[in-house]
Length: 432
Image: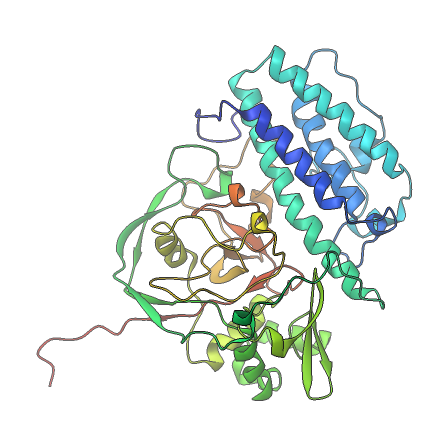
């Protein structure tokens, strides 16, 4: 069984493994043991659970299968720290993850050390192609959980009445407070194009197979929609105008009493935005991209603006021409920031995941992985929308043009934002 399509594996995979594991622990350094127990919404997980689950993944899908004589750290952990792999083992309801005070943090850390030692031994004794592929998959899986850990902590701290900051306030530059550069649209010719992962390096099964699509000419906005622009949508009654909303979106907005993005706090006639670095007055970050909006809100804003959201194929066609660099986790900002003016598309990578108009479905000829690992992506291809581009808490090494993130359309606790698109009206020669 192969977990990726490529036989090209980084020769420094052991170092990559160690780097990923160390980064997860570094992200937990600002947290107290009490912080790491909190699960503030059913979609989130406690930080302690993320630490254990990522160890469980290496243990369950690599060590237990490929390391002779490997002993489970604890016989109850395969049940306790399974996430959703039903063909592997039973597991607790996700909303109950914070209800288990044991194992304690010290034992979870010993679990991680036990698994680390096992992987190191396996890489030394049996670096077979399949072992290497699965270790690469495990490293990528843990990078996904690094991002989830930070988004979950942000939600936990937001729901805390003390509104603690994960890290101290960063210095707001003069540029943060300036108006964004004008929103313009860049044209793309479209035509017959290939999308999906090219056959070199690691990818997830949902990025395959690479295939041809036909795109009509289209335009993408040169930057993301800003806080100030979204505030204008709110002031114009955007949340009170059903003609702007999809039916399910209107129902979600009414039922959940949405009146602004998730982490906006209304104070009199102004707003504050809660971030991993604490509360910031919106007037200090007007040109930062609006974040923590659902697909429904993104779609409603696009209608209000007289535009639309791009399809994922349009986004990928643009992304393949842009190097992966931007406000990602490695930059250390941990919040969306203002775009830098320049030629071409800004903020394509980092800042916010960008909602697309595409439902999350398998590509033509899609084949999930064999066995329990086939549940990694394929089982979610219903009722979800695709996002592209990464966020301010996505590791740079983790993202690529073909990467497909996906969430239900009502999801708001992720760093998700808006890039507008529109069709190019063809010029009909000789028309009078």
